[in-house]
Amino acid sequence: MMLDRVLPLLIEQLAAQYPVGAGRIQGGWGYVWASYGITWGAFAVYSLSLWLRRAHPPMPEEHQ
Amino acid sequence: MAQRTRQGLFALAVAMLAIGAWLGLSWAPPDREMGDVQRIMYVHVPSMWMALLAMTLNFACSIGYLLKKSWAFDSLAEASAEVGMLFGAVGLALGSIWARPTWGVWWTWDPRLTTAAILLVAYAGYLALRRFVEDPERRAVWAAVTGIVAFVDVPLIWYSVQWWRSIHQIQSSPKTVDPQMVLTLRWNTFAFLALGIFFIWSRYRVAQSERRHELAAPPTLPSAPQGLTASGVRL
Image (cartoon, rainbow over all chains, first blue to last red; front, side):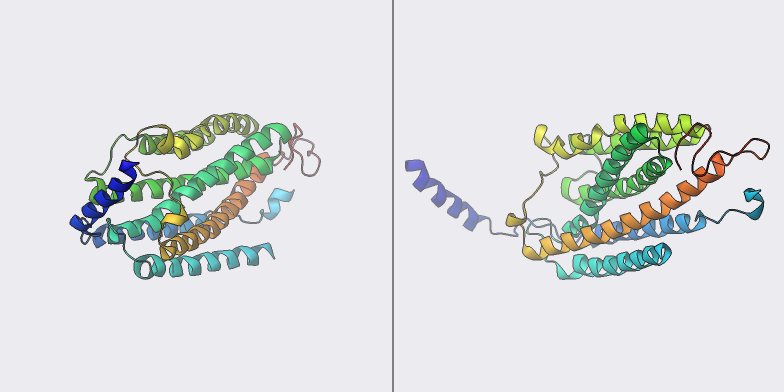
């Protein structure tokens, strides 16, 4: 019962001491661009590979 | 008609990816602790989800082939494994990039990361097996069995963060995430889904074409009935 009243006060004090964002990672856009670049690059290369391997209709002699 | 639908699906996926990139890179707010680095989530998470979805499709098609002996199931299993590998490899690479600024390392043998790496190794083996076995029917059976065994890893990946102590976060709830982040993640997930369907559909057509060429009856032998191979497997 006592803990129910003390705990929120404790959390409130800690939150005031360490405001939101105090430990935020700064920058890092290089990692973000690398990730999006790898994603788009991989999709583009795979799309190209599918296009190069695309199904062709059978040649006329294969019907014989 | 099917060709136009497929092209339309590709155009839709590309447009959705472009909007998804804008949402992820600009519109969604930075994370409270990870800042802008968290924007990697909008491509990492959909990639891994699509990988798991594709492997689940491979599992279903593997069972389907063993039950029905249909080449359509075999071709779809091959297509889904290859596309699943693509998404899995992208997802794992992005996870590694995201780990560097947040965990301080490119890689750690955490249960989630390890099971994801096992997935790629297992399906690389599956695709290699398909290359090594020349007889189409033997290859289809062996691949189906391998696909079923390899699928064991999929639920392990999903539950690894709940069953074992993991540095990777557990599945989060939309209730605890900023609505803009939820919308961005959902949008990108549907964009990846559209692209995944297009990839699997296109790869399935390639695989079916290869099967037809492989199974074409030699001219000196009597032709098999329309749509059937000599041993009765349906095309």
